[in-house]
Length: 440
Image (tube, rainbow, N blue to C red; front, side, top):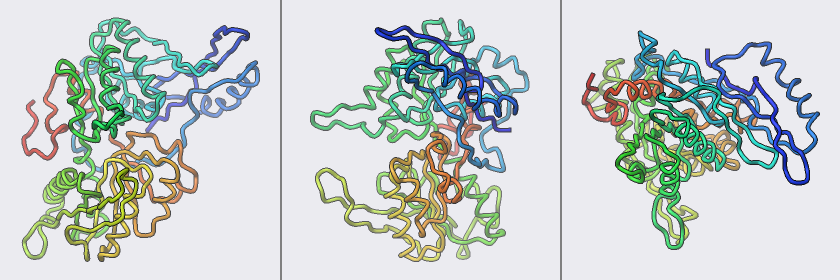
């Protein structure tokens, strides 16, 4: 069962301030499961607690909105929990407030409990943190998507707290690396991705694991003694779409084209193309070749021309490749406003695509992005991974539309955590397009 972690174990702590006294609810993250009774009683208990507060308060999180998460029918990387639970006895797994759902799922897959930490905010908005478990000499993993400034601050404090508490090693697992788009030098602007990396180093991190960084070069922002691994989700995506194709077309092979949302994503598209062709050939042999003996999966790209110096508007899009009569899968690393995805889907339909699917590793959905995607008639559906818990921010109409699906990569994260702790090879996860098998 997939456990959603909300703050069903709460406590109240006071922090004196100048001129007034303030009490703010501090939420206890870390319980690997919770009872139905606790779930049902949370709202009433919280309401009574809030009613007693003398001043403004800031709650750290609300009960997450529930959204069906998809899993692949086969495990393509996840090898299951360790046969001997003692191999992970020195592992402590914590999560930030934006990583509670994934943290719970990863802990369950590893067969360990999610470590407890009292994480919240004071009435003035400052973050409070106290580890509720001993980490001395432990191998600590922190699952913390950095979608907001608070997410980064939580990760900084968690890292420093574990380092000062004598953890043997602190690994920051950052499903979504915030500020990653600010990775180039522009006159009188910060290279914010590099600045975040330097700040995390100063907090005492020993290793970084992230998922589909905006560019591979981001790993180079960390010093050599701090390994930074970029986990690519394309193997899981390939398995998912292979299963969708086989189930939806009853084994009848049709043409499939993987389309890069723009030229910069051509490498991602080619990686997914190769892995999808391999998955189809391995598990669904009837999809291995098209009628003329050629590969059933091809690749294309949407070329986007910009004319304004501030790059704020694409004025012309052109398809490089063929889409007529094909099932097209648009590939992007981030869906934010949804404009790129929607316009690419419309172009593919105009070019004769029979179906248009989308895959974006990170579902950010700023502004009306989610509604724009859900209302796009040219797009059949969009699949995003759970690197960002976007279901917390979407309206019920969008959640119920079925246009946006969430694919869990928690098994992939669980596997790489297990391998890092056991010092095993991770190349088949970090470089899925390579045909080299992992070294046992």
